[in-house]
Length: 441
Image (tube, rainbow, N blue to C red):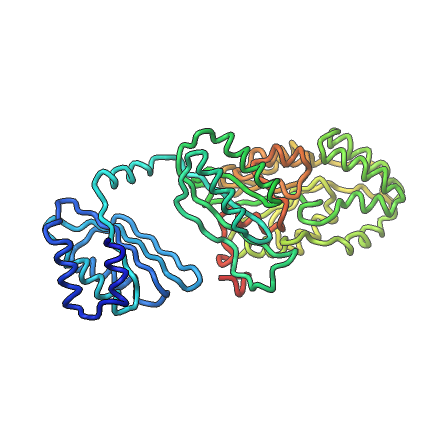
């Protein structure tokens, strides 16, 4: 009845004295020591709505227990959980709120909240919080329905849903589009391992990426992001490109594929591949570098991380000649890779120096974290091959990007269906947080 009563005021009641009488009669005598009211406001978004409600509540010394506001397509929804003090009556509070919002052409609903219900709500804050992130080219109702259904089946409650991606014009949805929605979920859950498995299966069925993370202070305070280079920052395996120029393309690419899939040891495979490059003219390096293309989203990702003050690094099993070019091109802070041994203007086929393999990448990540004065929980690592698994495993957030099956299955998170800038969404960064996202809101 209360919903109908107050929603109807805007169109059916014009005599404010009549409104006063109705509200007073409805709430007269209902005041208690701990009276709690939920005030829900909706209507076309405009300046002054929240201020109007807050000023009325302040006049009656109301204690705000919770407040939330969102705007979807210029439609505002505002909720205030308010405690009316014992020496105040609720009816004048509701009357004045109603009058203010009537003047602003807004709708309002009031709901009484029992002390038991409030106590139960407070108790929920001790339960674990989780973040589920949906990444896709576009967001569909089916995707939302399936994720929320799986969550409900596990006894998890959705606290909030937030769009992280920017607004996109209808005619701009294409193969390079990106969309992201983040769900904040609370609850112990029936079986978290089974929940994660269900989300992974669902991602495969829907051809989207669904990430699950525990919500913690570290998730919002990452400081260092490190990347593999080949097939991560760039759309190529450089050693395979060099092999093509040397006339041994098929032999080398076959070894590379087995190494990245984890079928053979990286150090062994690296030495075998470099040996096959023996005699390659060093002039070819510049030719190969000129045709290397950055991965979709790499430039936007790096400019955003730089604008937000993150440190970045390349930890590559490739070669320094190419990694240094990518470092300069993207403004990356650190770079570690392998030296391609060249003698008398040709590739010697020998390996010089310490090979940057999986264990070395993990070691370098630890060293960089120490240098930056941060803990490993504040680091992010991104890669695609089996040699990236050690660093993905120790980073606070390890992301397999368009990775081989073994890597995707063992990494904490995976992105396969959108560009590299999807990393930002898993870090909780919205498009509008970036100075380079002009037009995104």
